[in-house]
Amino acid sequence: MDGARPWHDGAGHLAGEALVRADNKLARAGHGLARGDFDRRVAVVLLAPALCRMRDHMVGSKLDHRLALVRDARPGGTRYYHDGHGRRGGRNSIDVAVAGRLDDLRLRHAFAHTARPREDALLSYNGGGLTTGSVINIEAVTKRYGEIVAVDDLSLDIERGEVYSLVGRNGAGKSTLIRMIAGITEPDAGRVVICGEDLAHRSPTTKRHIGYLPEELILYERLTGREYLRFVAGLKESDPAQIPEEIEFFELVQAQDKLIGGYSLGMRKKIGLAAAMLGSADALILDEPLNGLDVEMMRKLRLRIEGDKLSGRSFLISSHVMSFVERISDRVGIMRAGRLVAEGPPAELRLTAGMPDALFEDVFFHLAG
Image (cartoon, helix red, strand yellow):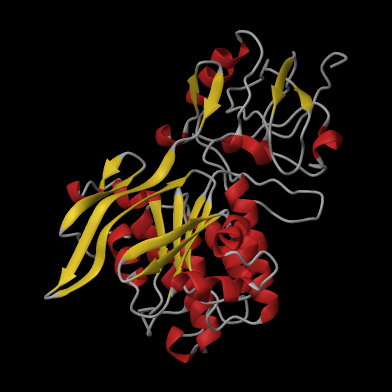
């Protein structure tokens, strides 16, 4: 990098040199990033879209300096990034201050504000590499209802910044598993660990790691949309300033002051999604998120998920729309009779089924049995 290129945006003046190599979808080369000499303390992020996908190491001793800045960051504003296609990413677990050659990254509108990152979201340094770790760990969980075994000794991990889709025929055990992960139902055996915390311990902080959209929404009919989101924000202890953003994103501006009892199916789904998105949860669990949405909103939601996962948020999605599952998922788990019978990236599942050119829907039916 030929010297430091100053960059301002309320995150402070960045100067100095460091080198980060990131293996990510937006950039596959080394990019110079400024290191830090700030007019106020800020959280520095190495590369906005690849924050939680870093695989290579920073050069020299600058890593410790940078992590120290992250730990010392103060509370501040909302963070976004925009990619070259105008898509807005999600709120970061750690603040982003991008400097250097933004044009190299296709982040021509990237910006950041100061913020205090959550301790659990800090990247770790291990043997010269930045690592991510799992957000959701399911360890040999079993759930019975009388003689019926709904989930049978099932284990899976979902990594930070991963979209994992859970599919299966009706009665396969998907909803039961999702309810256990969301903390609504307790397993009879095994355990659910969220960001290193056992869900069985009922710690007040554990559920803050999760945002949840149930398939069957239970809403307060006598509240307006905006009042309901304020209520949810209070429960989550999240910033109410985020509410107008979600109302606008889910196209509820005209309906925000109307009673939820008068909402259509699509509007109810949108308010449920907006409520799930509120806050800075590490993982979102979305059970049939597309039901009731029109094609345009389905696309917006897909782009939102793609953006949020790049900023480190994980997703567990259950959906019957196989085209959506194939496009959005890093990995897909196929359930049958309470067990995972197949798991992997969509392309890998095609090979497992011996159907490389078939529709993913046909691959699903073949593997689901």
